[in-house]
Image 1: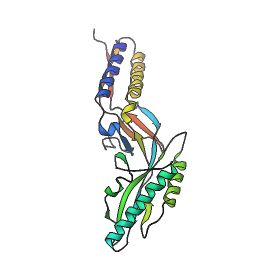
Image 2: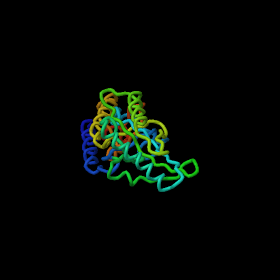
Image 3: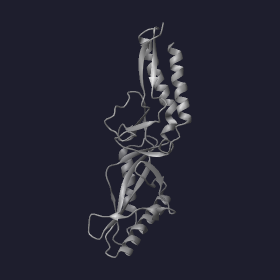
Image 4: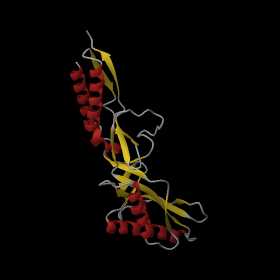
Length: 237
């Protein structure tokens, strides 16, 4: 009976995977201390997949305070353009936009960035993301050093200034691609738990058809999971 129930878990997860290609699950998403739904107090299951994130992500702001609005706008956008061109030359930095779903910032779309009022009089600012890949055991310190070096290297334009905004965060590309690996972990845990209680017990599971969710696990790691629950129950007689 235990084997039948575990097989059912895997089939349920596979069916969910086929219909789970939601925009955030299939795209690159920003990982903060909050889970996918933005409810940090909701419980996170014990079983999931912990892995190094794909990118370290730093939000930055270009602020301009030139008094003439037209010139101020030109300086801000010219500095953004220079940042994009520098990133293309370097190869270890990428620029993007977004608060949850990450999208590339390119020479074709950078003028679509929204300018908002800054903290100072006659100032405006534009915010975007600087990304660097976390691969080959790269740590947060190395990622920050690359991002800081890039920020310092972006050519200044007029009175426009480029500065950090907030703390370093992470991103993961297509979290739903890890669905099968997460289901394998849940199934193994359920099998072990039921097995310890003997052959007269089986597992009932819920939630494996839900989209993959996420939370931050460390400076460079994320925890990917399904909002599952299971119960070990006596087999029907």
